[in-house]
Image (cartoon, rainbow, N blue to C red; front, side):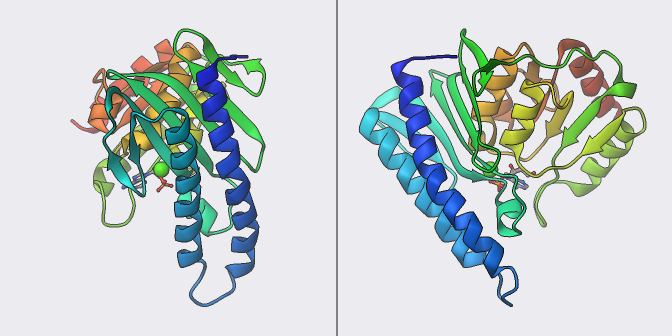
Length: 264
Ligand code: 2AM
Ligand code: CA
C-alpha cells in the first residue's frame, strides 16, 4: 500500500465524490422507465461529482491546474502540476443503469504522470499508483498478466461516440484483432479498462479518440504494474496522442503489429 500525503488527498477527494455518485446511480435506475430518460439527472450528477473533486483537490493543493471533463481547463499558479479529472468515466453505462463506471484522477508533474487514483464505487475497488512506488488494488500489489500468446488473450477496446472518431478504422482494427485473439470486450470505461489491464484481468486494451482525463490515471497504473503503454500508433505519449495501446511487453508488441496491419 502507498501512504503519502498526496495519496491521502486524492483518495479522500475521490471517495467523497463517489458517495454522491453512488447515491445518484440508485436514482438513475428508477428513471429508466421515464420517456425522457435520466439524461439531465446524470449531467447534474456528473457536475456535482466534479465540483466535489475540484473543491477538495484545490483546497489541498491550491496552486495546481486542472483539466476536467465538465469544467475544462483551469490554469493554476503552479505551472508544474496539473490534475486530470474525470468525475464520471463510463457515463453511458451510468445513464443506462449499468453498474460499470468510476472516478479517475491523475496528477501530472512537468509532463509526467506521478500519481493516480481510480475508484469503482459499485465494486468498492480502489486502484492507486504513485510513480516508482507500484500500483495497488485495495491493498494488493498489481502486476499485468503474464500471458504470451494472443490466442489466449482477452482484449478490451473502445469505440467512438456517434458522430465522433473513425468508425470504419475501428472496424478494420477490431476484425484484425478478433481474428487472432482469445476474446474481445467493450466495457465502456477507458479508466476501468486500463485498471483491468494493470491488475491482469485483461491482457490488452486499445482505444482512440480519448481525452487526457480518461487515461492519465490508468496509464500510470499500467506502467507501475509492469505493463507497456503507448499511443495506438506506438508513439511514446498517449496523453498527447489521445489514444492508447497497452499490455505486457510481449503482447503489447503484437497488438501494435496488428493495429498497423489493420491500417495498411
Ligand atoms: P466517458 O464515459 O467519460 O464519456 C468509452 O469508449 C470510453 O471512452 C469512456 O471512458 C468514455 O468516457 C471515453 N470517451 C471519451 N471521449 C470519447 C469519445 N469521443 N467517444 C467515445 N468515448 C469517449
Ligand atoms: Ca471519460
